[in-house]
Length: 240
Image (cartoon, rainbow, N blue to C red):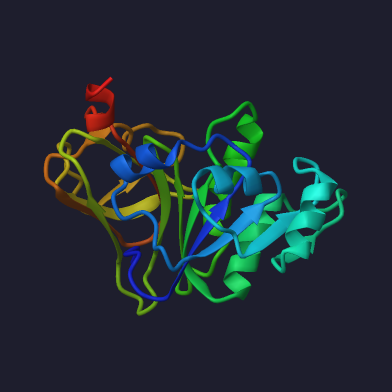
């Protein structure tokens, strides 16, 4: 089950496109637990500072953050985990793993979508499959999009469920991840699914629409990528 409740919250900030704090607060109320562990992935340090976050950990190889900044951070008593440039993992992956080692059970990733590198964005989406499903929940956020991965069965062997609360009219895409997603049942979406199978490569689960503020999806087997896209104009946009 993806719920976001309980356990240690963590925010990982990468060097991709990061919206401003007001946009994040407007799009995803309550996205930040003020007591959360904040991990900066290399150049994500600068993005975190602009957001008003104070990272407790800096991870990376220094290819997008000056070496002098690593030295300044270490001198300030903040933990630094410097990695070689030639490595198998991305800086974002190392930052996520560092959060898990410190006990994070829910991780919000910023700076993992958008930008000029589609390959980086795809690799960051793939990181959703990294944690043990029973041990951690991970989401990628930007100013309009939230991406999560639902895997079944749940820890107790029952179907896995993901609540989908949000604004009526927003888009919800359900995309099978890897293999077929079976036993897909939805509530609160315009185009209902009732214990159905979504096959990889087919777009049947694309662009569903939330018709209730309390929607949900249940999955009996397989994995389902859940992409929520805000389409209702925010008060910030209306004020422009």
